[in-house]
Image 1 (cartoon, helix red, strand yellow):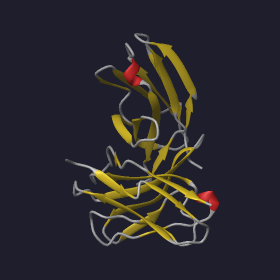
Image 2 (tube, rainbow over the protein chains, first blue to last red):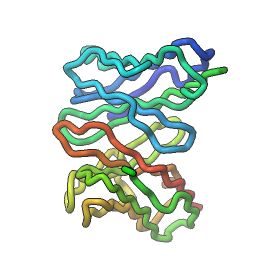
Image 3 (spheres, rainbow over the protein chains, first blue to last red):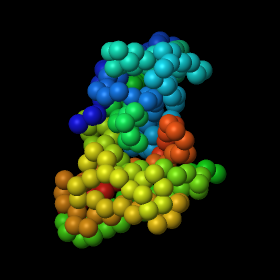
Length: 111
Length: 114
């Protein structure tokens, strides 16, 4: 399987703190995307980073990509209770049109 | 409103009884895909379609069929469902550019096979 892994599996923080989650993947990629999923609902796209980029920002989100280590991290700054959700990374393989998702990080932000 | 719709949202069925889960998108996207989500395994791609009449296997295609006769619709067919296909299913679509960008997901279909 080409599925990636995320670390940690679960994360619990206080409101206002920063949350960092990591994603490791197995193949060469074209781009890497992060998605958010509220309990049992559809995924929502957060941010995309291309293989030739190292860092990208969007609002309170910061994504880094290290293709030599096949890893990415998502930082959410100044977290809010509404950020409570599961977060998934997804890679687009550079050999085709398939997406591979990580196993997800469950984030709980305590008010 | 741009959206991906799936029906039904919840389905309980018995082993061997053929079923179809419909997926439709109103964004004129070329790329559509089906995923299943299981606890601890994240999302795994079942099938995807680059355009009308073009479909390809994903990571876990066994036991599933798809068709893409129209651009907006991408139904998932389980000819003979088995209990190991009990899962949460998501349809997604994406605007076909090289490379593919963000995917838009439907609300999910929770399937239970007894």
